[in-house]
Length: 83
Image 1: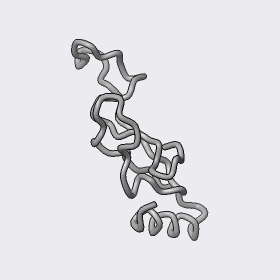
Image 2 (image 1 turned 180 degrees about the horizontal axis):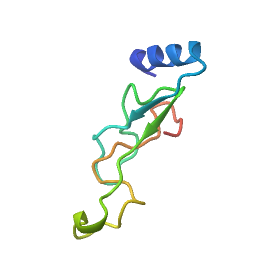
Image 3 (image 1 turned 90 degrees about the vertical axis):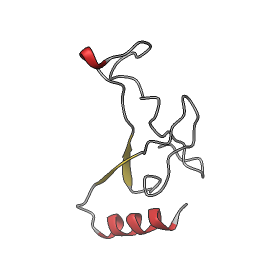
Image 4 (image 1 turned 90 degrees about the horizontal axis):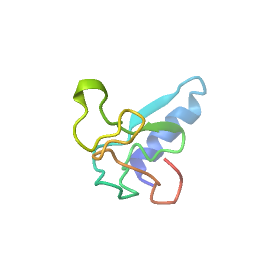
């Protein structure tokens, strides 16, 4: 649990009307789990991964927007929490 994530969590905890949404990151490598980094590992936020393209932007091997992009960081967090 990174200190940057802790600072984000403390802020969100104090502001109960605030919702923090953060990108998971672009450190994913195919299906490797656990590549999401701070501050996206925060406990009091929603972490969002990247999806594949749709329509004419789909390349060979892509399945569409319902699937995680190959470069998107993935959970779980280092402490095992789902992200």
